[in-house]
Picture (tube, rainbow, N blue to C red):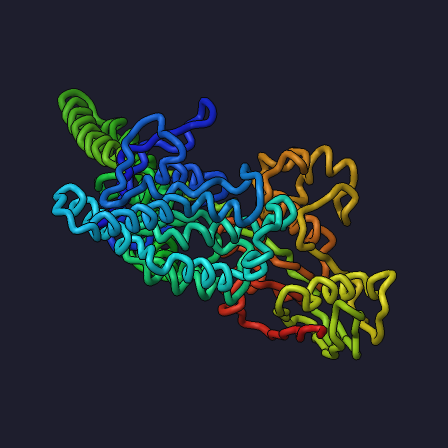
Length: 544
């Protein structure tokens, strides 16, 4: 039995806590995902669960796992070749194999040594439990399936400094899978993986027998593999618990099931929260009005004003008693409401407000045998105003080249090209990479002083005056979207729209794109977006 257990974990990098009283448990055969906004502490919590980082408070228990065999070296600090890295990481398992061979030879001497027999049994259990018999076969297979075949054989002598960051990330993932730890902890494992490698990872993770804890922005990967979702944004669940008098969630909200099931739960929770807040505010207004009427009753009205003698005292006492009774009831209702009142739901980080363009008819983009030698195979199409087109294709098939040509209205400079692409020139573009000073819209004043009210509906007002380099990657992406929309384009082009955004922002952006009535061209490798796309789709062919 292998179980991950975190109890009341707290951690901070500054005076403000990043993690506070976080508890979770992942059991045998469970595949749990941490999800939440960028910067909420997912990676930190995974490092604590991996026992790489010590919590300031709380306990970490990894039950039933021989963790001493599975400390994967951090590749970013490793010096040497790919083979050196593999040898270093797998040395503990190979040492077990060597010790087993020695123990086998000792038993072969025929001496009845009880201690030697016990040692042999222990090593045999480790050999079987970690499947060390097939270690070398596993090395070859995993490297090949993760697109690292070139690092086998003579390619293993390549220096780690000479291979790309993506290859280094895949190599560290490969080592983790090769070691077959009983408890698997992965942070954004699908980064830098192509479709085939992701399919292999899905298959591997689903067949893992021990506890699995991961974080990912790949919604399709989460959907394919998750059995449990831990939401690190538990505010809405806590507000609903407060309203019903239930026990509040501590740090994380647990949802058993797939990502789709979690989305449904969270959407329903937000709706309940919003409806509850509206109902409570209406009740507060009603109570205030009721109390004002009680004050009028206390004054006695016309009868008290016209009465004399004992009658006046009678009407005054009756009015006071009635008013006091109503105010006591109002006070009780007010106290109950105060104890259960929920905060106003947050909305700024969950919406992208796209201004709708003027209605146009006809062809917005026309491509005729457009081709760029070595980058883009010839293609032709017509895209009408109001249509949404999703462009897919393997890396290197020319997606970015096509989008840039549509945006600029001319082929890339210095290339051998043919054909034409013409169309709408009131166009905005969000490129694949994060902004640089001088990019369209990112003038020096904006770069240094922020995007101002241009960010309304896309970026939180507190960030409008922040210099662009001071924004997080996700907020820089939002700034790119805001500036692309600032000119009210009829045609909007977005290259890899979900890059840099957290899961909630991805969902909000996709909902905004779906509702936008303008012409939209998107290129993406995001399997969730591709599977849920409702407009036209086009797949670029390899140029070879």
